[in-house]
Amino acid sequence: MSSEFTILKIFEFLEDPEYPSIGPHLKLLGFTGLWHPNRNSLIGRFKQVLFYVTITFFFSQYVKCFINLNPDSLKLILQYAPFHMGIVKSCFFQKDYKQWQRLIDYMSSVERGQLVKNDPKHYEIIKDYIKRNRKVSYFFWALAFFSNFSIFSEPYQKNQINVNGTSIYLNIFDGYTPFHKEPPGYYFSMSIQTVLGHIVSAYVVGWDTLVVSIMIFFAGQLKITCYYCRMMIDAANLDKSHRNIADCHRFYTTLVEYTHLFNSLISPVMFVYLVVISVNLGVNIIQIVEIQDDIPTLVSSVLFVVACLIQLLLFYWFANEVTIESTFVSYSTFESNWPIADKTVQKEVALLGITTEQILVFRAGPFNKMSLATFIAILRASYSFYTLLNSTN
Image (tube, rainbow, N blue to C red; front, side, top):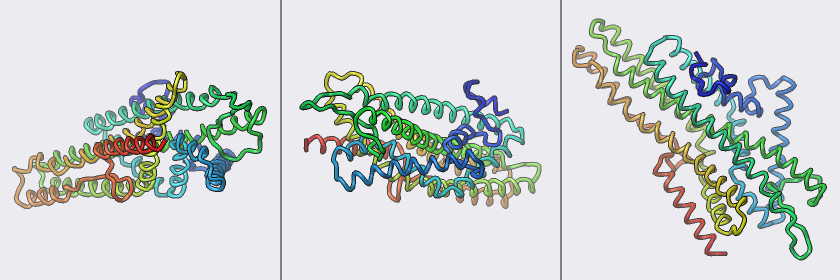
C-alpha cells in the first residue's frame, strides 16, 4: 500500500510501511545519525562521533569570533546563518530525542491503525496528505541540493584576488582546522568545511522537512476528526452513537495532546530561527545590492535568499493550515445527523462541539504565532534590518 503513496518510483526505496507519513524523513535523519534506534551498532557509533566532531567544529568558529572580535568572522556566520541553525536544530533534537520518538510512534500507530480499517474515506485523506508531503519534501530536498552546490562553489570563484600584492582565499566557515589559510593547506581546510557543511545541511533539511511533514500530518488528522464527527450518529443504534461520540472525543483530545507536545519541541528552535533568519535576510540582501559585474555570485546569492524564504514559508504556511483545520472540527459535530437523536445524545453532541472549539496554534517562542501574518511581519522586519545596516555603511 505504501507504494501507492510514492510520487516518483525512484524514491520508492525511501518508503517505510511502519511510518507511512515520515518514512523518508526518518531515513534521512537516520543516515545523518540524528535518528538512531540502534545506536550500539558500529555505524551508529561512527555517526555519533561524526555528530560531535561537526558540533565541535562549528562551536570553534563561535569561540574564535568571540575571542578575536573579528567582524569578518561574524559577517560570515550571519551570511550562512541557516547552516548554523543546523547546530541548534540537531542539538535540540538530541536533547529531546525521547519526546520526538514518542511523537513519531504515536503518528505511526494512528496511521497504521486507520489504514488497516480499509475505510475508503480514511484512505483517501491519508493518501492525499502523504502525496502532498512527498511533493513538498522532495522539492525542498532538491532546492537544498542546488543551493548547496552554488554556496560551496562560491568561494573558489572569488579566490586569488590580489589586494596590495596579497592573495585572498575565502572560506565558508571559519572553524578551527590545523591547516594554513593559503594553498595547499587551504584546500584541505575547504574539504573539511565542505564535508561538515553538507552534514549540517542534511541536519537542517532532515529536521525542516520532518517538522513540515508532521504539520501536514496534524492537518490531515484534523480532517479525519471532522469525518468522525460527521459520521458519529447512528439512527438505528443509540449505544453505538454514544460510543462514537466517546471515540471522537478521545481521538481529538489525544491529537491535541500531541500537538502541544510537538509545539513544545519546535517552539524554542523556531524562536531562534525567527531571530536568525530576520538578520540573515537583511545581511544577504545588502550583499546582493553590493554585487557588481559578478553574475555567478549574484545568481548564487539570490538562490540562497530564495531558498531561505521558501524554507521559512513552508513552516508558517503549514502551521497556518493546522490552525485553519482546527476551526472546522467544532462545526463538523453539528454536520452529523444529530436532529434525529434523542435528547441525551443531542446534549453529548453539544458538549463535544464545545470541547472541540480549541484553535490549535504553533508558536515560535512564547509570543509569536506561526501564521502567514507572522511570515509577512518577518519579511518587514528583515527589510527594516536591511535599511538599518545599509544606512550605517
